[in-house]
Length: 428
Ligand SMILES: [Zn+2]
Image 1 (cartoon, rainbow, N blue to C red):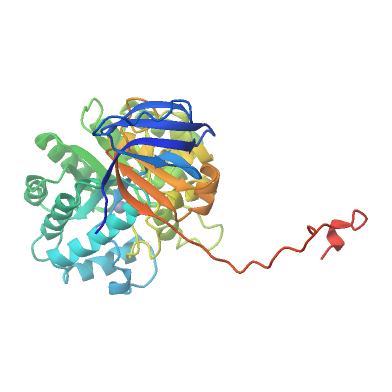
Image 2: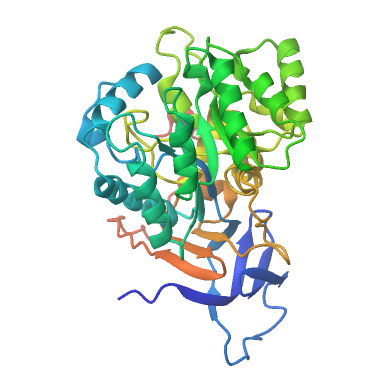
């Protein structure tokens, strides 16, 4: 039987991303103090104090948040065996398969996917859920609402009703009635993108909930984000746009005008590099575009930017490690963000887009942490180490311990060194 979750009151000897070595005190689900390591002594004297975790050898990071998942689709690749291809082809494979899905089968895959993400450090997930076109349109919603209840102690799960243009207003509102948090959709796929966009925003306004729309997920298709930004201007509700691939194709002068509209509405943008890299560019065999949104322009304009992994092992992306460190790595190599920008996008940036409480390693912040067995942030993102501790709401909810044995030949008595006269290129 697992001893987890385990309430934690103190983390000692933690290396932070900026290199500092600190002790961190927790008070319930909040950080109460951060001080230089070893300075405060053992203060765990209260009778009801939680555990002290020794983080020697770990880097301590704000926990990742996943701002755009599809838990109802996850882990279906092997069941569907779809052909590889672009977004349209993936939708075709997926929709054909949905007819076979039961509430139970959806819940089973979704729960496995949530656990994989939590084990790698993600403590908050926003998942879209399809309003299905065959049978009970809300069985995916019922499945994910059930998973959210079951796993409430280890992860915060937010749900978005993903409405195609064929889903009626009544079905979208039925999903909200069942406990879905936000209105979603993909207006760029609708026969009349702007009309579908206006319909979805109107439902969100009528029900006083946020909206998170798949937006302009193509290299050559419609550009709806300006209208989305204008429609939600002045909103106090949460509004965010996922993908925004088309934004990344605009000439710089046009891009500046569009980004200004996005910034003026405080519309959050969610970048999803792994799925964009997979689904985009199939028609461009030469100088194939990457399909990512205009990350640099958005960050420079002060737009709230988060990043996620989107699909995991389904017709929309056959691979994926359920690991925010993989997304951060892709933001560096495919999106040209710095190491710090990349990790921010999958952690504090993602939480900001989701309007979750700030979770930094600072007094007053939410106690949401990922500790990775690594020498620093660069090592963590580059290597994606297996050894991890995951803290959610001040409690240890997952621990992965790895043991490695390697047949390394014994060292010779004197260390190997090249004679100084031998040029390096001749050394063998
Ligand atoms: Zn999506």
